[in-house]
Structures are given as C-alpha cells and as structure tokens.
Amino acid sequence: MDEPDFLDLAVLIKLENGTTLEKLSGITNSSIFDASNIAGSLKQKNLIDFTTYFPGPNTIIVTQNGKDFIDEANKKAQEQLDSLDNEILRNLLNGKRSYRDINDSLNIRPRDLATHLFKLIQQGYLVYELRSGNAYLLLTDKGFNLAKTEESKKETKVLEEKVNEELKELKEETTKKENNSINEIVNDIKISNKKQRNGLIITLAMLIVLLIVLIMIYIGA
Image (cartoon, rainbow, N blue to C red):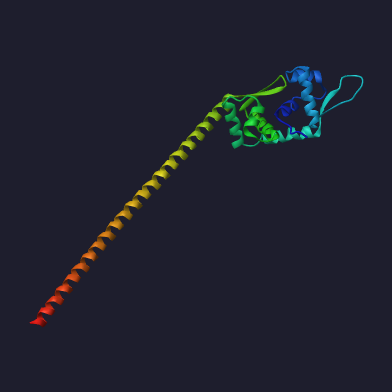
C-alpha cells in the first residue's frame, strides 16, 4: 500500500460527514476529474471509504486509518521544531512550492513529511493552497524570518568550519617547517661534532708520530 502524503492529509482534515465527490471538487479547488483521482488515492490507501446508500449520491467517510493519520499529525504539531522542519523551511526559501518537490529533495517518507508540514502550518510558519489536484506551500512572515536566520547560522557554521580547517592546515604546515628546521640544526651539530672528532683524531695521530720520531732520535743518539 502506498504511503499517505501531505495532499492526503490536507484533504482529510477538510472532509466533513456527508461530503460528496462534487463537494470534494470544491474543497480541493479542482476539477471533478482531479477530485476523483484524489478520492481514488485516498480510498486505495484505506484513508476513506464510500457509503453505498441508494438512492442518493455516495458520500465519503474517513476510515480509522484516516483518523489515526490525522491524530498523528495533531500530535506532531505539538512538538518543537527540529532540524527536519528547518530543512523544509530552507527548501521553501529557495523556491520550492510543491510538497512533492520537497519530498524529492529531502528523500524522506511522504508520511513523515506530511506531519512535519502540518506542524509548520499549525505553528504559523506555512500556509498551503489546494489547487488542480495538488497542494502548494508558501512561507509566512514568521516562516521566512526563521528560514533566513537558520540559513545564516548554517552559512556561519560552514565558514567557521572552513576557517578552522585552514588554521589546522596552517598549524600542521608550521609544525612541519619547525620540525624540519630543528632536524637541520641537529644535523649541522652532528656534522660539526664529526668534523671536530676527525680533527682531534688527526692531531692525536700527528702527536703520536712526532713522539715516535723523538724516541727514535733519542735512541739513535
């Protein structure tokens, strides 16, 4: 069974007892054809059912699954905003209007997106419009200001991370240069000590030779 989405939820909360297909067309601001498709989708997802009274038009009733979906959305609407809500607002700030576009962008369950959109609507960050078999979303002033604030925070965080990364690389490069300089100094000292040792050895050898020569002269005398 397909996942219920925001359009399903938006239609469900507008349904009243005795709603007919013709009334559904007016509720959703859609043609009879589009309204029939919406009703068919709701029926397929077991969110609504139809009465079979005769004579007279068939009416729509919300099933227990549909009521549970509405209750889930109402419960979500009482929660505080989270990172997903902020991402939804950011997508709308960047020009997305259809819930389907947002769903594709965030790649999350349609049911989860629906309840989060409902939360944002109930808390005054969004408004929506049903039209031509679709649901379109708009930021309110409250939603726009929050989205801009969160976007600025995100940009600041990215900038800070970039600066910290550059400082880390600079520190590593400086440490590397310092280590190289220390190694060069140590090597110079080692070379200098080696030269001094070699000089001492040569001097000592010359003294020994001189001593041998003096001994030979003394013996010969």
